[in-house]
Amino acid sequence: MRDDYLDKFFSGDMLAAARLMSIVERGGDEAEGVLTALFPRMGRSYRIGMTGLTGAGKSTLVNQLTKHYRSKGLTVGVVAEDPTSPFSGGAILGDRVRMLDAHGDAGVFIRSIASRGSETGLSEKATELADILDAFGRDLIFLETIGVGQLETKIRYSAHTTVVVLTPDAGDDVQSLKSGLMEVGEVFVVNKADRPIAQRYSDDLRSMLDLRSPGDGWQPPVVCTVATTGDGIDELANKIDSHRTFLDANGRLEEKRFEALKNRMRRLTEEKLKELFWENEYIKKSLETALSEVVSGNKSPYQAADEIVMPIKIEKDKIEKKDKVKGRGKRKGGAR
Ligand SMILES: Nc1nc2c(ncn2[C@@H]2O[C@H](COP(=O)(O)OP(=O)(O)OP(=O)(O)O)[C@@H](O)[C@H]2O)c(=O)[nH]1
Ligand SMILES: [Mg+2]
Image 1: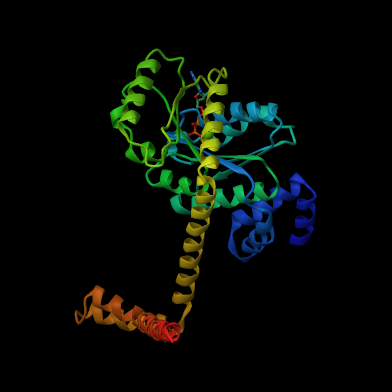
Image 2: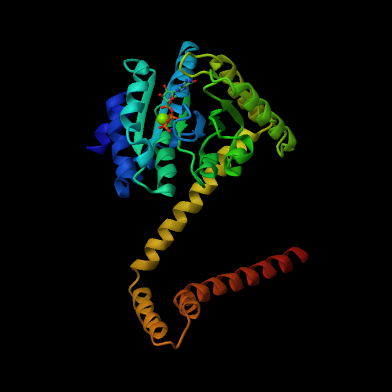
C-alpha cells in the first residue's frame, strides 16, 4: 500500500503526496518508513516561515506571496498550522477559504494541520510535512505557524527565512512585543497597513531593530503590507529574496540546513532513547523500588532518580575510560 503511494508520489501524483502526508501526520513506524524513503530527495526547497500573532494576516500574506512566486514560475507548498485555540475557532475553515485562490493550480499544494494542543510536536510535524513537499519537488515552502511562546525559536530550525507578521493594532506598542518574536525575525511585516497608525508603528519597529546589532551581518528589514489588496507584496518578496541571496553568499544556507539536521537528530535520538529506557524491565523495576523508598522517606526524589539512571552512568563511564585508553595508545603510536 505504502509502496504504491511512493511510486505514484515519485511520478508527481498530488493525491499520493496527500496520502503520504496523512501517514506521516499519524506518526509511528510507518511514518518513519515514509520519511526514510523520501529522505534522499529532500534538501532542495527553500523554506519560508511565517509567524506572528493570531489574525495578523499570515494566511492572507501566504496567499499573496504564492501568487507572486507562481507568476515567476516557481512551485509552492504550504503547511499551515491551524491554531485550535478558543480565540480563533474558525481558523481552519477560514484558512481553507482564504486560500481558495490557489486551488486548482497543480503548482500549489496546501496542507493544514491541527495543532492538537501540543507545542513541540506541532512544529516537528509541520517540518515533516514540509519535508514531504520538499521531496515532492516544490521550489518554495511556506510554513505558517502560530506565534506563541517557544514556537518561534522552533521554526528557526526548519525555516531558512523567518517572516514575523505584526499589525499596528490599537494598544499594541512595539515595546511590548515578545522578545522571542523579535529575535527570530529575519524579515518583519507590518500588515494591515491600511490602518492610520501603521506608519508610526513601523517607524518605531525600525528604530528598535536598528538598536540591535545583527550577529550574522543581516539587518532585518521592515515592510508595510495590506495583504487583502496585495499592497507591498512585491517588496516583501523582494526582501525575502534578498535574505536568501545573503544566506547563499555567506554559506549560511548550508549552515542552516546542517543545524536543522543536527537538531532533528538530537530530538530523534532523545525520543528513541526515552522509549528504550522506559520499555526496559530492569528500569521499570528500579523505578518501582526507588519510588517506594521515596514514599517511605528514605530517599529524596533526586537520589532516587540518580539511582534509576545509574546503569547508564556506569556504561557511560566505561565507554569514556575505553576512549581515553584508546586515545593514549594512539598518541604513543604517533610518537614512535
Ligand atoms: N484591513 C485589513 N485586514 C486584513 C489584512 N490582512 C488580513 N486581513 C484580515 O484579517 C483577518 C485575519 O487574516 P488571516 O490571514 O486569516 O490571519 P492569520 O494570521 O492567518 O490568522 P490565524 O491563522 O488565525 O492566526 C482576515 O479577516 C483578513 O481578511 C490587511 O492588510 N488589512
Ligand atoms: Mg492563518
